[in-house]
Amino acid sequence: MNLDGRKQASYVNSENIGKEVVLAGFVTEYRNIGKNLKFIILLDWTGEAQVVFSAGKTGEEEMEKIKGVTNQSVVAIKGIIQKSSSEKFAAELLAKNIEIISRSDQQLPIDISDNTETTFSKRLNWRSLDLRKSENHSIFKIQSAFIKGIYNYLVNNEFIQIFTPCLLGTGSESGAEMFSVAYFDKEAFLRQDPQLHRQLTIAGGFEKIFEIGPSWRAEESHTMRHLCEHRGIAIEKAYINSEEDIMRLEEEVIISGLNEVTGTCKNELGVLGKKIEVPKKPFPEIRYPEIYDILEGLGKKIEFGKEHDWESEMLLARYIKEKYGSDFYFINRFPFDSKPFYVMRVDEDNMWARSVDMIYKGVELSSGGQREHRYDRLIENVNYKDMKSMGWFTDVFKYGVPPHGGFGMGVERVIMQLLDIKNVREATLYPRDPERLFP
Image 1 (cartoon, rainbow, N blue to C red):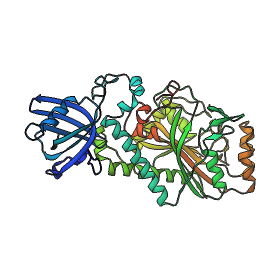
Image 2: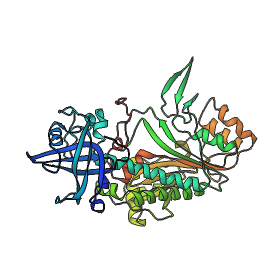
Image 3: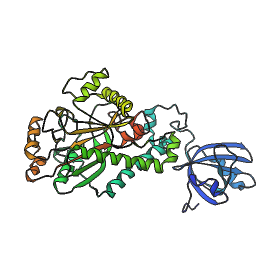
Image 4: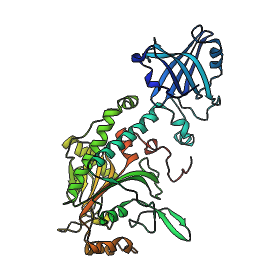
């Protein structure tokens, strides 16, 4: 059967009754009503369509073929769209011809029904089968739309896309775990963040840049929020006045991404039963050291000069929601001791850094702020953090670098929070964590 010009399952609707079409997809259900009437449910990435095989209207040979169809087989069907009496489907396809393109084994290794009891780990072992569910299609189409909205905003505002190395000769953040790899006769490391090379690109005269790509952290973390490999959207901008400019940029980026989701993913949001609220700007902001007083008022005591913990983020999220009615907020002016060397310190009180996290529903989605562009201050930071072998990065700052800043945002974690998914691995096609390296 010629698949050129085939239609997708979503095309089988009341507006297209009477049209002859070819559909192709996975068989998710087969119902044998009797010798003269059979139904299958066909799934593609736009959703499901009901196909009816009726004796007298469907040829005898095709009625025999349908008997050999198994669950999850890939088939192509030519037929006429007609009105359906089903409560679930307004229209259906009356089959004329069927071709079994790829027959599935009868016994599936996992249950991929809506009421599956298969363990999450086993589902990930058979991720391609698990992904066939409409809910999973919806998650990743929403993820794609979110990135598209951000991409469009950045390109329309004269940011250019760049690609920085994934292999590094040294770490970018003291204390963070890195994956080492053999690089000929040397040791190299998978990047934790494209941060430093974005800054070097700013030093090269590029004023507005962004990058979408992977990063790695060799953390023995088993939480539902952490991955060893994640995708990030990293943005850097030159000639800023302060970290406030970066916060305003981040608001625009988030709103653009969410507008794309709400505008183009109504069907997917419906499949997941989710309604997305696009936030109003500006997002609320709270700063150190006032955070210590806020948390103490909420019953959480944090030692002065120390960074808050995950429990504190949840408390602050409820505080912001009650006070400002927002699920998004910024935390600014972190203790410098908890931040990387490249962050700019507050000149008036260098205990604090111009470092900003964006929190959504109690979980950090991004980290950023203003970078230190003054060579002497940058070297002070390097020495304070006891960093070594950073000349490859810091030396260029001797020769004039504009004030700049930016942020990095974890894509999977954004989607996890946006759709109220309990485990970030559900928002990751093929997750990598301390236990999982396949498939």
